[in-house]
Length: 179
Ligand SMILES: [Zn+2]
Ligand SMILES: [Zn+2]
Image (cartoon, rainbow, N blue to C red; front, top):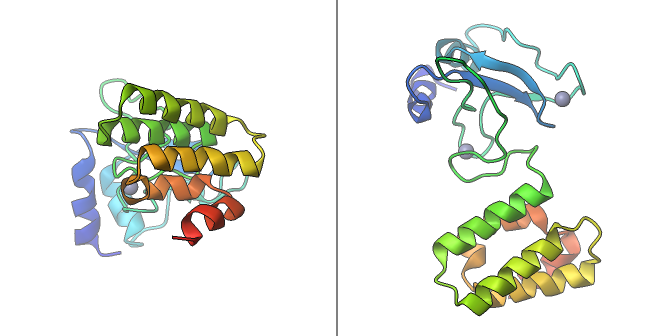
């Protein structure tokens, strides 16, 4: 990528904030890369000073959001402590975001976007809790998604990116495939 574009992507960082390198499973490889170093390494004008594969699990190491290209915000002064976050500022889920984290983010988005009645809000929350279970059979997942869509018909418009990472192929076909 061009250096200029990369420098533009730094605008999301706070003053003095560094950039993190995290593997696709969420292991922190380097919490404090300097933005300058990140630009040079991403423009491939210098080689990376962190391993390109995670030394814990072998997964590919990321320093930017796959959706929008913004660098992963790292530690901030004065302590430069760093905590891995499941979502980018653009709203995209990071590869390491768990099913539960994605569902809770979806719940936040629905509550922000929709003026739900109290009854619908409770219904959506119940369905989200049900979907957060790892072992919910697909038929019930399908029913839960249908109930959520009834309560928030525009969901696929504003929350689609997250929803699609949560539905199994089968549920997706049932819900999204037949419009
Ligand atoms: Zn790893
Ligand atoms: Zn992003």
